[in-house]
Image (cartoon, rainbow, N blue to C red):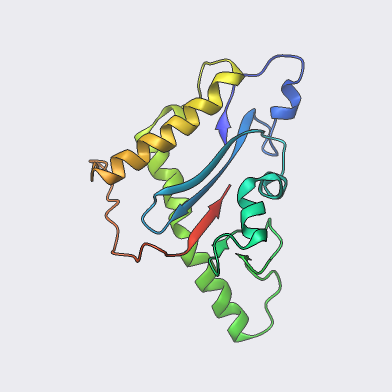
Length: 175
């Protein structure tokens, strides 16, 4: 989520659960932190699962467009055949092991948010723009991030070196 300036007739829909004004942005990345999908248009008060359920990505996954591919989400989502989420109340060692694995495999999307905020401080510090101009800036940052990765333009003060991962690897859902 990214900070916005308050104001306007519908400003309260942009107030998130933490009490500040924001957009709720959905991003999907692969293990190399390459952004595979971004949606940057929902007010901060909108729940993550609403954004996902309304997305073309959800429709594509429902149709089976990605074959046996899966994405990982946090506990704010329903577990589906193509969307693996943590178990809320583990009862066995196997369930606890699944949760540890699921959470650690979701780590790249959390790292992605940190990398994006370091690479593009406006995503961390807020933008003094009209609300309709903010989503294109967020999407542009995502595109520029992918270009930087493709050109091995890493951040100087943060190690984002990534291990070799097969091209068709799992992706992570992050909101």
